[in-house]
Image (cartoon, rainbow, N blue to C red; front, side):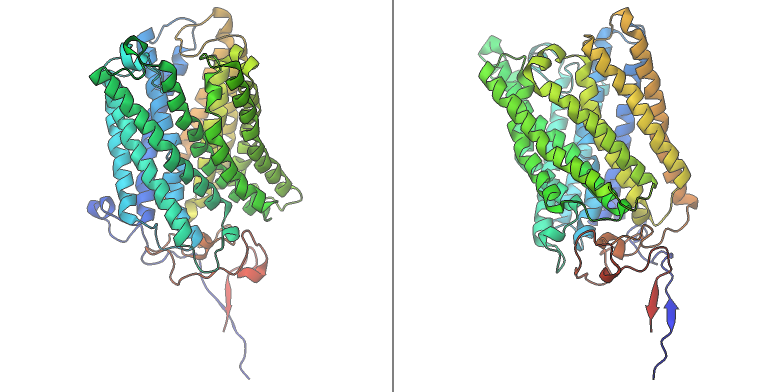
Length: 554
């Protein structure tokens, strides 16, 4: 009779060879086809552009501390807020989560060795960098004063020649987005591990699938719009300029047909992260998993039908405004499904208040405010009063920044140990998360009041009686900046002196937690076979008891 002996396996040691140390040369990184290394290249790139966009944001808030144009002359202010918008929207918010966390974890979470087209994946990063550098060069050498929307006639008649160079940068970045979306769709369809059925997919994957549909269907429209803008300006063909037979409203239709769905390119991946955080830190399967999954697809589809609510004050008919107003309220339904199902998941859950979960709670609060204020703007009567005021600024920062950036930071903290094999300081992580939440609300909530009182956007000066609220907003921006800078410091320090994290520090069932930290070059030592449902926290799915050393029986 053989005696049963418990043998411990140390899961805290990093593997001898993994994607980070498999070649240290610059060429091995710049020519890599490993999706994980490409994700890290994206991480460094989007962090650089986020910092650059943040500098322009700081200049805006410093200017608005006083009612008069004391720091920036009005024309310079126009160029500064345009640079802030272009960099943040096209170079950070849209690519941040899909290109970094999506690139890294989509293959890992479905059990694939890599994305379907590794060379195209690398090409997408080079296109992103080329477009980003072209746009940044134009914005800082002469600048563009049209606003990030490039509205005509500003961009066709009055702006300087740099608008075409900036448009070229956005055009190139668009191809990067299209290639990334294509890669994700093909990978999710064709490279799932055995047993990974559609309804065993993590909701992070569902959100990226829906996002990829928008990337492929919507991005060509804005690319063609930018091309038509350049063609009109160079060849004087009447497309948008009424002076030569064009229609300026046509530009707004084309631009917002892409740019409103683009909001969901920013928000849907963040929603996928929040689903992961709430399920895993509540240790419960997401309530109504199927509804949450299909709500991502519904948002992507209905999002293409609501662009007209950006044109309520642009002369469209009352009947068109009514239709778009109703559709705008309809698109809120799948977002509400997610929010209510997340809340139901939290109910009676075994909640852990770790740093990623604090970001999830922040997301719920900020997205709720952003979504509810969107109902005001989707109603034509209210929108006419609030259009082009700081109410708009506050709303889309709550939706686009409060949701996307918060989700991005939550996901980065959640998967940092898997990406690097190192633990960050949980104490400083929690402090940073709270500072970001407080600073964000102090920055942007006063802007709802400013907008309702009539403070117009895009102006360097304003009425003196509005100064107090602007000072609150600028003070909040300072708190927010401190909260944003702190992760740069403690995450970097974790790479230097952080403790080894182990393969599965959160004790979670997903496939990405069943390989080493950092993952090997081909992701898994053995091809995985999925036999459990998504978010199955029972020990029957191969998990060891929580907070115990993993054991093998010999």
